[in-house]
Amino acid sequence: MLDASLYITADRDAAFAEELMGFYETHQPLTFFHAVVAQELLQEAVDARRAEETRKNLMRPFEARGRVITPTFAAWARSGEVVAALVRPWSMRAASVTRSFLNDVVLAMSCREVGVTLVTRKLADFERIRRVAPFDFVGPWPRG
Picture (tube, rainbow, N blue to C red):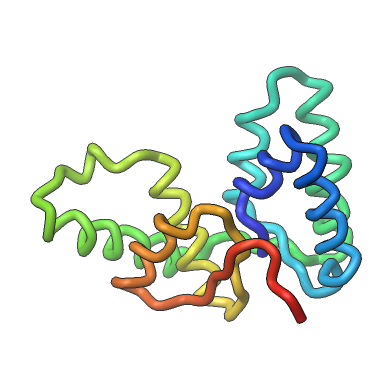
């Protein structure tokens, strides 16, 4: 499963977009799309045309193949426990945790639940999450 950070970077960087396409050529039959990634990409869409391009080019192909993952109640609940466990040691308020990080925790817990590896550029965030709730993730681009 690919994190939204990869799609957003590819949208802004042509060389990275080529790397993403190379990854897809090899791994697309094994790749899933996550509902949280859809939310993050659509909130980045600056107009209706961009939103429709996102749906058409990124979301619909995965929907058509039945390769979309939506967080279960258990993943949502576990994400709250993970955030609480991360907040406690630093005496932070849970309200100070960003929405982006909360989405990352839900994404991580979904990956853990269904047994897929997350591909992301946000290694530090996911390393932090993995300290509390182990799951598989790699940086771009996994080989093999």
